[in-house]
Length: 158
Image 1 (cartoon, rainbow, N blue to C red):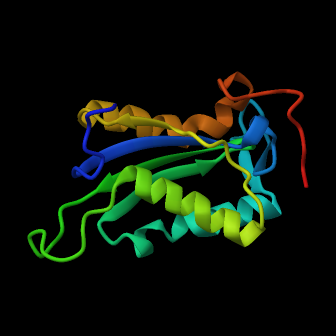
Image 2 (image 1 turned 90 degrees about the vertical axis):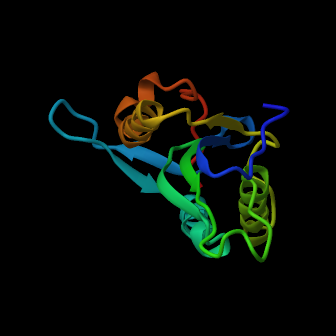
């Protein structure tokens, strides 16, 4: 949203896709009627996982409420909280700053960019919206063949 202040405290749903939606981050295995699938990270996916887990350390007022690393995209549910000191000190992080910094760290580590330039964001509008997004992230591996980012010929497993 053009006029929205992405440093405002609140929750945000973020989706970042790989370039050309190539499957380089993970594999979804173990799908069955009674068996929930597992996300098996590739070496590139392990790098992405590492830097995803460092977001709250790099930005102490940003909480990683949930995330999943799919074969060709990453979903994150981030929450920006108020600063404990009443707003004194460094400026609040913005969602674009957090996401672009995360992508930059991954690019520097790998030596090349793996993500599309843009990303999808959704401002969470309330508890019901939050719960639906949280469940969507948790259930995304089980629904992989029906995912909007699923590409059957996008298979590439480094």
